[in-house]
Length: 84
Image 1 (spheres, rainbow, N blue to C red):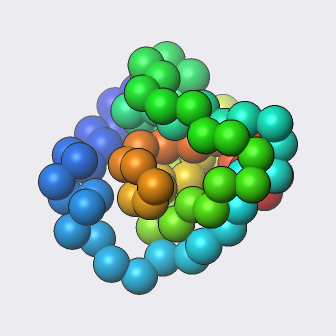
Image 2 (image 1 turned 60 degrees about the vertical axis):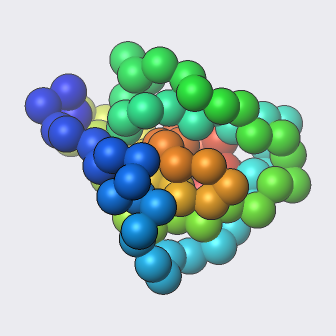
């Protein structure tokens, strides 16, 4: 996953469509890329509605899925934090 280049915030803002879901756990950390190695740029509270555009499955652990969100902020969220 480390060799992937995430979209810039401008590219993510221009993305349209996607799927809407809510943060189901207590909080969800939003990161700059699809890995725990990327810095946290925001934390979303339970019940916040997010819109995700795509997802990536960790090749080393298929149970770990990262979702690229563009609302309410741009970034990547671990699917476990969304309850997905």
